[in-house]
Image (cartoon, rainbow, N blue to C red):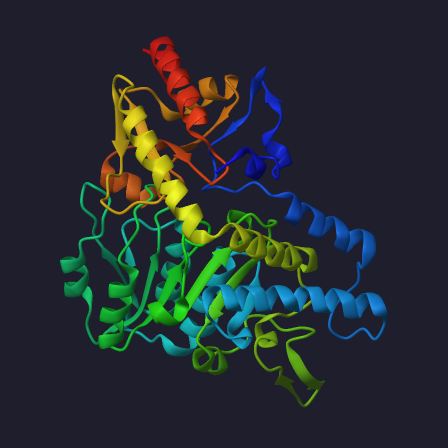
Length: 402
């Protein structure tokens, strides 16, 4: 990637603690290009209005922009617009399915499968559902490299399995899971599959028809859009069979005290005034990354990952946590017995932003017998020069803290 790409991200061009900002916390949230910033600005300056039912010009324009974003997302993941539901993010997408699908179709004695590597948001809603329904949560173990043990997954599958929910890419380790195979095997026993796509959508092409997943969720703020917006994709027949998640305006066709008729998809799950500027920002972000090209982005980020893996190992005592054969541009690490937070503080003094802690993956950290890690995560606007500067800062920090 070249300087013209970085020039489109204003936040990257600032000084932090006397040093140029090096932003390596992209797995937590991505930075926003001018195309997204301007889309939000234009909404508030030119056509701020509520959407769908207004007859006036501003309402019509806002509705058009918002629905254009839905179309962009549908085309991006190869779905129909009826299957694209705007939500607040991946967490709400999972909770929506756990509530609207789970409460209707999960019964006592049923089983739900997740992996040992999941984010808390892909564990807790299923635990809550299991507790409510008398179902059982089963867990796919992982190996020391941070890969699911597929043979053990196959052993967990049975006629009791009703839902399998797994991340496409681990937010903590960057491991890319064989989700297409996971889905195929789950379908053999009649289970539906939810794919947590939060870390996948920024880095690779995701085709829901090719995967044959039943549900997929992702968050706008990780894919260069605003916060508080995301997508739940669901197969149309499943969404039709589910009860609404919330009641209110927009998700209805008609209301009387005798009863309510629910709206058609996708509005059935979109009660109330939505996050309009968030949806518009997501459409702008999708169009932006498509202009660059996901294949180009993936190739460059693979190059960055190979480079940082090699360079980090030059730091005495540094241990990479998560060495899966198939990884995205996320690298977790520890240096000797130095606490990750202490390393994060010293890097911040050099203008370098990384993430430290358990990354909302406490069961994973328990499996690895550690409290947490340092995590550097990369986007297509990062550079090898930034990696070199980070390696230098890590060496300095390690000497100070040893």
